[in-house]
Amino acid sequence: MGTNRKGPQEPGSQLILEQFLPYRLSILTNTVSNTIAREYRDLFGLSVPEWRIMAVLGRFGPLTASAACDRTAMDKVTVSRAVARLIEQQLVRRDPDRDDRRRSILKLTPKGVRTHQEIVPIAQGRETELAEALTPSERRNLDRLLTKLQRRASEIAAQEETM
Amino acid sequence: MGTNRKGPQEPGSQLILEQFLPYRLSILTNTVSNTIAREYRDLFGLSVPEWRIMAVLGRFGPLTASAACDRTAMDKVTVSRAVARLIEQQLVRRDPDRDDRRRSILKLTPKGVRTHQEIVPIAQGRETELAEALTPSERRNLDRLLTKLQRRASEIAAQEETM
DNA sequence: TTGAATTAGTTGCATATGAAACTAAAATTA
DNA sequence: TAATTTTAGTTTCATATGCAACTAATTCAA
Image (cartoon, rainbow over all chains, first blue to last red; front, side, top):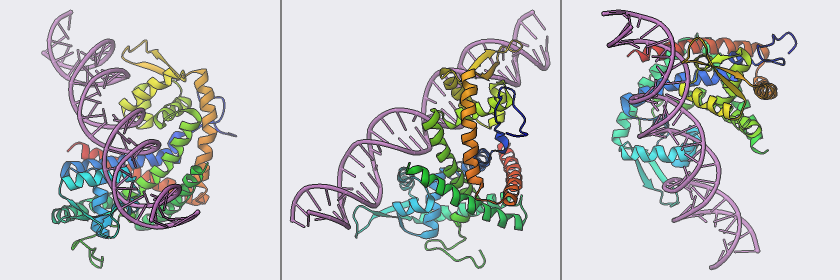
Protein backbone atom coordinates (compact mmCIF):
# COMPACT_ATOMS: atom_id res chain seq x y z
CA MET A 1 0.00 0.00 0.00
CA GLY A 2 1.11 3.55 0.68
CA THR A 3 2.88 4.72 -2.43
CA ASN A 4 2.25 1.39 -4.12
CA ARG A 5 0.89 1.97 -7.66
CA LYS A 6 -2.55 0.56 -8.19
CA GLY A 7 -3.02 -2.09 -10.84
CA PRO A 8 -5.36 -2.17 -13.80
CA GLN A 9 -8.14 -4.15 -12.15
CA GLU A 10 -7.17 -3.76 -8.58
CA PRO A 11 -8.12 -0.89 -6.34
CA GLY A 12 -6.31 -2.30 -3.27
CA SER A 13 -2.82 -3.53 -2.57
CA GLN A 14 -0.64 -5.03 -5.26
CA LEU A 15 1.38 -8.16 -5.44
CA ILE A 16 4.44 -7.75 -7.55
CA LEU A 17 4.85 -11.34 -8.56
CA GLU A 18 8.30 -10.87 -10.06
CA GLN A 19 9.57 -9.69 -6.67
CA PHE A 20 7.67 -12.21 -4.62
CA LEU A 21 10.21 -14.46 -2.97
CA PRO A 22 8.32 -17.78 -3.03
CA TYR A 23 7.65 -17.24 -6.70
CA ARG A 24 11.24 -16.36 -7.53
CA LEU A 25 12.54 -19.38 -5.66
CA SER A 26 10.11 -21.58 -7.47
CA ILE A 27 11.09 -20.30 -10.90
CA LEU A 28 14.79 -20.60 -10.18
CA THR A 29 14.47 -24.09 -8.74
CA ASN A 30 12.33 -25.29 -11.62
CA THR A 31 14.77 -23.90 -14.15
CA VAL A 32 17.67 -25.64 -12.44
CA SER A 33 15.87 -28.91 -11.67
CA ASN A 34 14.42 -29.31 -15.12
CA THR A 35 17.81 -28.89 -16.73
CA ILE A 36 19.43 -31.37 -14.40
CA ALA A 37 16.55 -33.83 -14.50
CA ARG A 38 16.69 -33.93 -18.26
CA GLU A 39 20.39 -34.61 -18.20
CA TYR A 40 20.14 -37.48 -15.70
CA ARG A 41 17.31 -38.98 -17.65
CA ASP A 42 19.02 -38.71 -21.02
CA LEU A 43 22.41 -39.90 -19.85
CA PHE A 44 21.52 -42.46 -17.20
CA GLY A 45 17.78 -43.10 -17.36
CA LEU A 46 17.45 -41.88 -13.79
CA SER A 47 14.80 -39.65 -12.24
CA VAL A 48 15.74 -37.05 -9.64
CA PRO A 49 14.54 -39.16 -6.69
CA GLU A 50 16.49 -42.12 -8.06
CA TRP A 51 19.61 -40.06 -8.45
CA ARG A 52 19.27 -38.69 -4.92
CA ILE A 53 19.08 -42.16 -3.48
CA MET A 54 22.22 -43.09 -5.39
CA ALA A 55 23.91 -39.97 -4.06
CA VAL A 56 23.19 -40.67 -0.40
CA LEU A 57 24.03 -44.33 -0.73
CA GLY A 58 27.26 -43.38 -2.42
CA ARG A 59 28.12 -40.94 0.29
CA PHE A 60 26.79 -42.57 3.45
CA GLY A 61 27.02 -46.21 2.51
CA PRO A 62 24.41 -48.83 3.38
CA LEU A 63 21.26 -47.21 4.72
CA THR A 64 17.73 -48.22 5.53
CA ALA A 65 14.94 -46.69 3.47
CA SER A 66 13.94 -44.40 6.31
CA ALA A 67 17.51 -43.18 6.77
CA ALA A 68 17.47 -42.43 3.05
CA CYS A 69 14.24 -40.48 3.57
CA ASP A 70 15.89 -38.36 6.25
CA ARG A 71 18.99 -37.76 4.17
CA THR A 72 17.13 -36.75 1.05
CA ALA A 73 14.13 -35.02 2.63
CA MET A 74 11.92 -37.04 0.31
CA ASP A 75 8.65 -38.72 1.11
CA LYS A 76 8.80 -42.40 2.04
CA VAL A 77 6.52 -43.21 -0.88
CA THR A 78 8.87 -41.46 -3.26
CA VAL A 79 11.83 -43.31 -1.77
CA SER A 80 10.07 -46.66 -1.87
CA ARG A 81 9.29 -46.30 -5.55
CA ALA A 82 12.69 -44.91 -6.48
CA VAL A 83 14.38 -47.81 -4.69
CA ALA A 84 12.13 -50.32 -6.47
CA ARG A 85 13.29 -48.96 -9.83
CA LEU A 86 16.92 -48.85 -8.79
CA ILE A 87 16.71 -52.50 -7.79
CA GLU A 88 15.13 -53.35 -11.13
CA GLN A 89 18.00 -51.60 -12.83
CA GLN A 90 20.41 -53.49 -10.59
CA LEU A 91 21.99 -50.32 -9.28
CA VAL A 92 20.93 -51.00 -5.68
CA ARG A 93 20.66 -54.14 -3.59
CA ARG A 94 18.25 -54.70 -0.72
CA ASP A 95 19.17 -57.07 2.10
CA PRO A 96 16.94 -57.81 5.07
CA ASP A 97 18.05 -56.36 8.38
CA ARG A 98 18.72 -59.26 10.79
CA ASP A 99 18.00 -57.19 13.87
CA ASP A 100 14.73 -55.67 12.74
CA ARG A 101 12.91 -57.57 10.08
CA ARG A 102 10.70 -54.62 9.18
CA ARG A 103 13.77 -52.96 7.81
CA SER A 104 16.04 -53.68 4.96
CA ILE A 105 19.47 -52.40 4.16
CA LEU A 106 20.06 -50.62 0.88
CA LYS A 107 23.42 -50.41 -0.80
CA LEU A 108 24.86 -49.68 -4.20
CA THR A 109 25.73 -52.70 -6.30
CA PRO A 110 29.11 -52.66 -8.08
CA LYS A 111 27.25 -51.45 -11.15
CA GLY A 112 25.62 -48.81 -8.95
CA VAL A 113 29.00 -47.66 -7.69
CA ARG A 114 30.27 -47.29 -11.24
CA THR A 115 27.21 -45.31 -12.29
CA HIS A 116 27.54 -43.14 -9.20
CA GLN A 117 31.14 -42.41 -10.08
CA GLU A 118 30.09 -41.34 -13.53
CA ILE A 119 27.32 -39.06 -12.34
CA VAL A 120 29.07 -37.22 -9.55
CA PRO A 121 31.47 -35.24 -11.74
CA ILE A 122 28.66 -34.31 -14.09
CA ALA A 123 26.51 -33.10 -11.22
CA GLN A 124 29.41 -31.16 -9.79
CA GLY A 125 30.12 -29.68 -13.19
CA ARG A 126 26.59 -28.37 -13.47
CA GLU A 127 26.74 -26.92 -10.01
CA THR A 128 30.03 -25.21 -10.77
CA GLU A 129 28.62 -23.77 -13.96
CA LEU A 130 25.70 -22.35 -12.01
CA ALA A 131 27.75 -21.13 -9.06
CA GLU A 132 30.18 -19.39 -11.38
CA ALA A 133 27.53 -16.74 -11.80
CA LEU A 134 28.66 -15.65 -8.33
CA THR A 135 31.98 -14.61 -6.85
CA PRO A 136 33.38 -16.80 -4.07
CA SER A 137 32.27 -14.35 -1.44
CA GLU A 138 28.81 -14.16 -2.94
CA ARG A 139 28.66 -17.92 -2.82
CA ARG A 140 29.47 -18.00 0.87
CA ASN A 141 26.84 -15.39 1.34
CA LEU A 142 24.23 -17.29 -0.57
CA ASP A 143 25.03 -20.27 1.56
CA ARG A 144 24.33 -18.37 4.75
CA LEU A 145 21.15 -16.82 3.41
CA LEU A 146 19.79 -20.15 2.22
CA THR A 147 20.53 -21.70 5.58
CA LYS A 148 18.65 -18.97 7.37
CA LEU A 149 15.72 -19.13 4.98
CA GLN A 150 15.53 -22.89 5.23
CA ARG A 151 15.46 -22.73 9.00
CA ARG A 152 12.67 -20.20 8.96
CA ALA A 153 10.71 -22.00 6.24
CA SER A 154 10.87 -25.23 8.23
CA GLU A 155 9.65 -23.43 11.33
CA ILE A 156 6.70 -21.97 9.48
CA ALA A 157 5.85 -25.34 7.94
CA ALA A 158 6.05 -27.12 11.30
CA GLN A 159 3.94 -24.49 12.98
CA GLU A 160 1.31 -24.69 10.25
CA GLU A 161 1.20 -28.44 10.69
CA THR A 162 -0.10 -28.30 14.23
CA MET A 163 -3.02 -26.05 13.31
CA MET B 1 38.99 -34.60 -4.81
CA GLY B 2 42.24 -33.58 -3.24
CA THR B 3 41.70 -33.62 0.51
CA ASN B 4 38.11 -34.75 0.02
CA ARG B 5 37.40 -37.66 2.36
CA LYS B 6 36.47 -40.87 0.56
CA GLY B 7 33.06 -42.36 1.30
CA PRO B 8 32.20 -45.88 2.41
CA GLN B 9 31.48 -47.37 -1.01
CA GLU B 10 33.11 -44.82 -3.17
CA PRO B 11 36.77 -44.69 -4.05
CA GLY B 12 36.45 -41.55 -6.20
CA SER B 13 35.09 -38.07 -5.68
CA GLN B 14 32.24 -37.34 -3.34
CA LEU B 15 29.02 -35.44 -3.68
CA ILE B 16 27.85 -33.80 -0.50
CA LEU B 17 24.15 -33.64 -1.16
CA GLU B 18 23.40 -31.31 1.73
CA GLN B 19 25.77 -28.72 0.24
CA PHE B 20 24.75 -29.27 -3.35
CA LEU B 21 23.11 -26.06 -4.53
CA PRO B 22 20.42 -27.53 -6.80
CA TYR B 23 19.41 -29.84 -3.97
CA ARG B 24 19.29 -27.07 -1.38
CA LEU B 25 17.24 -24.86 -3.65
CA SER B 26 14.86 -27.70 -4.26
CA ILE B 27 14.36 -28.45 -0.56
CA LEU B 28 13.85 -24.81 0.32
CA THR B 29 11.42 -24.20 -2.51
CA ASN B 30 9.42 -27.31 -1.71
CA THR B 31 9.19 -26.37 1.93
CA VAL B 32 7.95 -22.90 1.04
CA SER B 33 5.62 -23.97 -1.78
CA ASN B 34 4.01 -26.77 0.14
CA THR B 35 3.19 -24.49 3.03
CA ILE B 36 1.74 -21.86 0.78
CA ALA B 37 -0.07 -24.34 -1.44
CA ARG B 38 -1.80 -25.84 1.54
CA GLU B 39 -2.92 -22.46 2.71
CA TYR B 40 -4.35 -21.41 -0.67
CA ARG B 41 -6.12 -24.71 -0.97
CA ASP B 42 -7.61 -24.64 2.51
CA LEU B 43 -8.65 -21.00 2.44
CA PHE B 44 -9.64 -20.49 -1.20
CA GLY B 45 -9.72 -23.87 -2.89
CA LEU B 46 -7.03 -22.72 -5.30
CA SER B 47 -4.00 -24.60 -6.59
CA VAL B 48 -0.68 -22.84 -7.05
CA PRO B 49 -1.08 -22.50 -10.84
CA GLU B 50 -4.58 -21.11 -10.32
CA TRP B 51 -3.39 -18.62 -7.76
CA ARG B 52 -0.57 -17.51 -10.05
CA ILE B 53 -2.94 -16.81 -12.88
CA MET B 54 -5.06 -14.74 -10.51
CA ALA B 55 -1.94 -12.90 -9.41
CA VAL B 56 -0.78 -11.94 -12.91
CA LEU B 57 -4.29 -11.01 -13.99
CA GLY B 58 -4.62 -8.89 -10.87
CA ARG B 59 -1.35 -7.21 -11.52
CA PHE B 60 -1.19 -6.93 -15.29
CA GLY B 61 -4.85 -6.81 -16.13
CA PRO B 62 -6.46 -8.57 -19.10
CA LEU B 63 -4.00 -10.95 -20.72
CA THR B 64 -4.05 -13.69 -23.29
CA ALA B 65 -3.23 -17.22 -22.13
CA SER B 66 0.20 -17.08 -23.68
CA ALA B 67 1.00 -13.76 -22.01
CA ALA B 68 0.00 -15.45 -18.76
CA CYS B 69 2.42 -18.28 -19.62
CA ASP B 70 5.24 -15.80 -20.05
CA ARG B 71 4.41 -13.93 -16.87
CA THR B 72 4.18 -17.03 -14.71
CA ALA B 73 6.82 -19.19 -16.40
CA MET B 74 4.32 -22.02 -16.42
CA ASP B 75 3.63 -24.49 -19.18
CA LYS B 76 0.78 -23.68 -21.55
CA VAL B 77 -0.93 -26.93 -20.58
CA THR B 78 -0.81 -25.96 -16.92
CA VAL B 79 -2.16 -22.52 -17.74
CA SER B 80 -4.92 -23.90 -19.93
CA ARG B 81 -6.14 -26.18 -17.17
CA ALA B 82 -5.81 -23.62 -14.42
CA VAL B 83 -7.79 -21.13 -16.48
CA ALA B 84 -10.49 -23.71 -17.16
CA ARG B 85 -10.97 -24.24 -13.44
CA LEU B 86 -10.92 -20.54 -12.68
CA ILE B 87 -13.66 -20.00 -15.24
CA GLU B 88 -15.68 -22.80 -13.66
CA GLN B 89 -15.29 -21.08 -10.33
CA GLN B 90 -16.30 -17.79 -11.98
CA LEU B 91 -13.14 -16.06 -10.89
CA VAL B 92 -11.97 -15.42 -14.45
CA ARG B 93 -13.77 -14.53 -17.64
CA ARG B 94 -12.65 -15.44 -21.13
CA ASP B 95 -13.60 -13.22 -24.07
CA PRO B 96 -12.65 -13.91 -27.65
CA ASP B 97 -10.07 -11.56 -29.11
CA ARG B 98 -11.68 -9.72 -32.03
CA ASP B 99 -8.41 -9.16 -33.83
CA ASP B 100 -7.09 -12.68 -33.61
CA ARG B 101 -9.67 -15.36 -33.16
CA ARG B 102 -7.15 -17.95 -32.03
CA ARG B 103 -6.68 -15.90 -28.90
CA SER B 104 -8.91 -15.05 -26.05
CA ILE B 105 -8.61 -12.41 -23.41
CA LEU B 106 -8.57 -13.41 -19.77
CA LYS B 107 -9.60 -11.11 -16.97
CA LEU B 108 -10.69 -11.35 -13.38
CA THR B 109 -14.42 -11.22 -12.77
CA PRO B 110 -15.65 -8.94 -9.97
CA LYS B 111 -15.68 -12.03 -7.77
CA GLY B 112 -12.15 -12.75 -8.94
CA VAL B 113 -11.05 -9.25 -8.01
CA ARG B 114 -12.51 -9.66 -4.54
CA THR B 115 -10.79 -13.02 -4.06
CA HIS B 116 -7.54 -11.57 -5.32
CA GLN B 117 -7.81 -8.75 -2.82
CA GLU B 118 -8.29 -11.27 -0.06
CA ILE B 119 -5.32 -13.37 -1.05
CA VAL B 120 -2.74 -10.69 -1.65
CA PRO B 121 -2.34 -9.63 1.99
CA ILE B 122 -2.10 -13.26 3.06
CA ALA B 123 0.56 -13.98 0.47
CA GLN B 124 2.44 -10.87 1.48
CA GLY B 125 2.17 -11.85 5.11
CA ARG B 126 3.74 -15.21 4.43
CA GLU B 127 6.51 -13.65 2.47
CA THR B 128 7.20 -11.14 5.22
CA GLU B 129 7.31 -13.93 7.76
CA LEU B 130 9.85 -15.76 5.63
CA ALA B 131 11.89 -12.70 4.74
CA GLU B 132 12.08 -11.69 8.40
CA ALA B 133 14.65 -14.42 8.77
CA LEU B 134 16.94 -11.92 7.03
CA THR B 135 18.01 -8.37 7.75
CA PRO B 136 17.04 -5.72 5.18
CA SER B 137 20.54 -5.69 3.77
CA GLU B 138 20.57 -9.47 3.56
CA ARG B 139 17.29 -9.29 1.70
CA ARG B 140 18.70 -6.90 -0.85
CA ASN B 141 21.63 -9.19 -1.18
CA LEU B 142 19.52 -12.27 -1.68
CA ASP B 143 17.66 -10.38 -4.31
CA ARG B 144 20.82 -9.69 -6.25
CA LEU B 145 22.10 -13.23 -5.90
CA LEU B 146 18.84 -14.76 -7.04
CA THR B 147 18.79 -12.47 -10.05
CA LYS B 148 22.28 -13.53 -11.03
CA LEU B 149 21.54 -17.20 -10.50
CA GLN B 150 18.32 -17.00 -12.45
CA ARG B 151 20.07 -15.37 -15.36
CA ARG B 152 22.73 -18.06 -15.41
CA ALA B 153 20.27 -20.90 -14.92
CA SER B 154 18.22 -19.65 -17.85
CA GLU B 155 21.32 -19.46 -20.00
CA ILE B 156 22.27 -23.02 -19.17
CA ALA B 157 18.73 -24.23 -19.81
CA ALA B 158 18.56 -22.43 -23.16
CA GLN B 159 21.93 -23.75 -24.22
CA GLU B 160 20.95 -27.29 -23.28
CA GLU B 161 17.78 -26.94 -25.31
CA THR B 162 19.58 -26.50 -28.59
CA MET B 163 21.61 -29.67 -28.18
C1' DT C 1 2.51 -62.56 28.49
C1' DT C 2 -0.98 -60.53 25.51
C1' DG C 3 -3.36 -56.70 23.64
C1' DA C 4 -2.56 -51.75 22.07
C1' DA C 5 0.25 -48.53 19.97
C1' DT C 6 4.26 -47.49 16.98
C1' DT C 7 7.25 -47.98 13.19
C1' DA C 8 9.04 -49.64 8.40
C1' DG C 9 7.73 -49.93 4.18
C1' DT C 10 4.28 -50.89 0.20
C1' DT C 11 0.11 -50.34 -2.44
C1' DG C 12 -4.28 -48.16 -4.08
C1' DC C 13 -6.43 -44.25 -5.50
C1' DA C 14 -7.21 -39.75 -6.97
C1' DT C 15 -4.96 -35.82 -8.77
C1' DA C 16 -1.09 -33.38 -11.16
C1' DT C 17 2.00 -33.01 -14.71
C1' DG C 18 4.18 -32.48 -19.28
C1' DA C 19 5.21 -34.20 -23.92
C1' DA C 20 3.08 -34.93 -28.15
C1' DA C 21 -0.77 -34.94 -31.06
C1' DC C 22 -4.42 -32.30 -32.34
C1' DT C 23 -7.86 -28.23 -33.91
C1' DA C 24 -8.48 -23.87 -35.51
C1' DA C 25 -6.93 -19.46 -37.01
C1' DA C 26 -3.37 -16.45 -38.92
C1' DA C 27 0.78 -15.44 -41.35
C1' DT C 28 3.88 -16.58 -44.99
C1' DT C 29 5.23 -18.03 -49.39
C1' DA C 30 4.72 -19.49 -54.03
C1' DT D 1 -5.27 -17.10 -53.84
C1' DA D 2 -4.00 -21.59 -52.83
C1' DA D 3 -0.69 -24.26 -50.31
C1' DT D 4 2.54 -24.25 -46.42
C1' DT D 5 4.10 -22.95 -42.08
C1' DT D 6 3.43 -20.93 -37.73
C1' DT D 7 0.89 -19.78 -33.61
C1' DA D 8 -2.81 -20.17 -29.78
C1' DG D 9 -4.77 -23.13 -27.14
C1' DT D 10 -6.89 -27.85 -25.90
C1' DT D 11 -7.01 -32.77 -25.39
C1' DT D 12 -4.94 -37.20 -24.91
C1' DC D 13 -1.98 -40.28 -22.81
C1' DA D 14 1.57 -41.96 -20.03
C1' DT D 15 3.96 -40.97 -15.89
C1' DA D 16 4.62 -38.75 -11.25
C1' DT D 17 3.00 -37.51 -6.94
C1' DG D 18 1.22 -37.81 -2.26
C1' DC D 19 -2.29 -38.97 1.00
C1' DA D 20 -4.51 -42.66 3.20
C1' DA D 21 -5.08 -47.29 3.95
C1' DC D 22 -2.72 -51.31 4.40
C1' DT D 23 0.69 -55.38 6.01
C1' DA D 24 4.11 -56.92 8.86
C1' DA D 25 7.26 -56.54 12.58
C1' DT D 26 8.44 -54.34 16.96
C1' DT D 27 7.83 -51.90 21.21
C1' DC D 28 5.10 -50.48 25.02
C1' DA D 29 1.87 -51.10 28.84
C1' DA D 30 -1.31 -53.54 31.73
